[in-house]
Length: 386
Figure 1: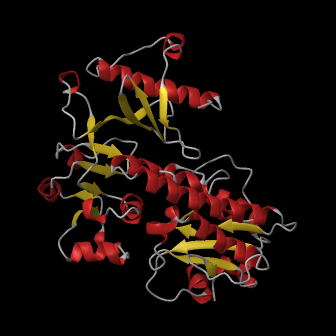
Figure 2 (figure 1 turned 90 degrees about the horizontal axis):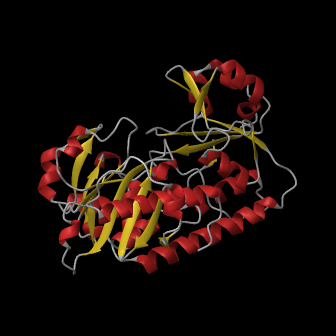
Figure 3 (figure 1 turned 90 degrees about the vertical axis):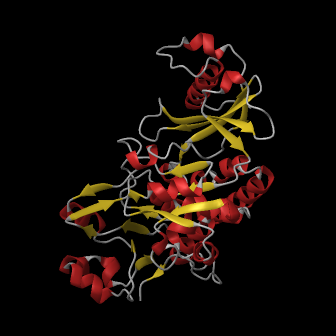
């Protein structure tokens, strides 16, 4: 595969370092000559098209899954040799980090991990999940009700005894910049960091299903599913790109005294752009949300056409409830014109399914921004607040 840019070259180099380390009992090396590394052939087994957080490479018969740090692209969070469980593990790899495939039992601590496994027909291997009280997927709820899946974490606290009891081959977890939680370390079970939510391109988040496909030997199914999603998303993106009018939009609201808005290169900003809208803060280069004082936001967004809000609530959310939170909200044109786009994350399964269905998220916004393009669309996650 042709390497498209220097960042990919650097990623390939990092992947090689971990493979070479595996051949030497995976001992740490403090420095490696870049030119020397570049001259050694390396086969890329899985080079993602959109995702930036992983790569799968092969050298001398060893396939390695490398997960990159979302905070420092010069570092790896995890690197594992993928080894068929039908073959005996060589003595030279006894001290290596190895994932035996296909993985037969997992603890998936995020919905973005177990939801794709359900899509691949592998729900039977999901032995542990977290925060089951928030889960909406009926299939997963049935697994939990029947005792096939156990809740092993709640409110950020890991239930070590339950984790150990289910005996997973692998625990997939959302990484934190401060390091791995002590509760996870105590299990002595293989840990696989899963920073998919740091992907800023919608299809990048979806593409992590390919990693799961490799782990459970469902590569063909995972690739086909991703290709169908990518095709639908890109067709919608192309449809919206042809529009001449680009309505303006801003997002979120005050929470705990702070108003965090999506960065100009964030996941949400990309969705807005792909749906044919102009994000008010698009010039900001951040990929994450950042705080701004309400005066600045008001001055920039007062006359925006739309306002997107996402939150979980058990009651019907209304303009009256929003106004009760802050009187200033009524001064935005989007409030006055009833152009607030609302997503009830507690009832729409947005956090469970949204990253696996970016084409549906995109379609919602296109139907709102440009209703003439999708006149028959039925809202899935986002709709105009009534």
